[in-house]
Image 1 (cartoon, helix red, strand yellow):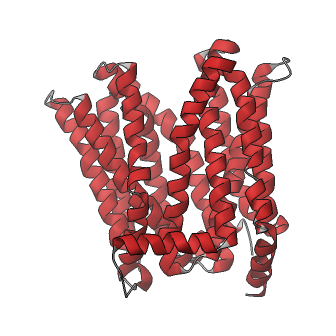
Image 2 (cartoon, helix red, strand yellow):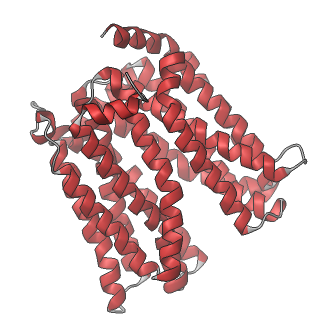
Image 3 (spheres, one colour):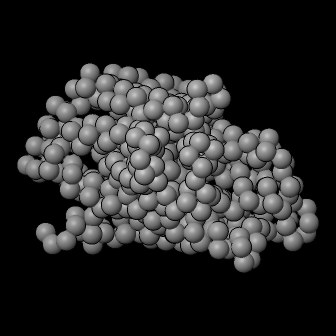
Length: 419
């Protein structure tokens, strides 16, 4: 097989090529909006820090409130229409912003509603996308396909934010939001070309009601040792990342006296590391196994967070830069490995519910981690809280060890190699 396996995945499946292209376009647009909407609130609408904080909270609420329901919908409905409808739906919601901006009718309550509706559809779209990959690629190519998707996200983090900053500077934040609306239209058009029979027709029968379907997904996760370990590890890791995110900027700007420009440049290194991790994740899982790769990635993430605190007092910018680079790399390897393991461990007709259970736990951990990071920063200082986050990230390996993830992952590797 010539070239990286993720290139072979793109060559070997037209459905995956369309899914990958749609994901790349929409994530680039979302990268623009991720910068444009907070700037729109703060600069154009003159929002207070409290109002901007509420906007951030509103964007996270749908992921907790609707995640489990979205998982059931994804399992019940054909995925292609779900992906297309949520892409076009997000385009319509985002398109409202420039229209109301031109009419001078834009306000923070309107922006709250737009962000909530966009994120609600993003929950469904993300779960559907994750459930589609095992239906368009053979099991042996799942890690390669997930690597290709991971690279998209890292590229969007660099290019999307950079493009967003340029657009805000030259055409304004309101017009920049329109770019994201167009990106979702283009993504929806690409998804029309998905042809796999499993994606265009619902195949789940014997439904027992929404609540019972949600329960069945949670019960399935609870009774599978590997899935429990992966969900707990992801939840603890997300808690650590939330503490890191709540502490990092304050630590760099107030305690290490970094300039805003330097902070931005160092943040880009995380995206560079993410691209490298996405490109090499499939090779890592193939050579070392899924379980070992995921455990090593978590431990590397813990070291990376510790480096962000510049603990040695020598060349702190170098320490932080290495931490960002390593953190981006290890985060991508972990994301690809744990997602592929979930896909291998889960029946196709339950992928939506199982992925939703993990997503619910992760997003429920984020607000708590943010609160702990903020309060701990006020009491102990932001740099010590980065060390706390590193310790918690290291603890996220424990569920993987207790759940004997490596043993199960080795069996999958042998089965895939035989197939």
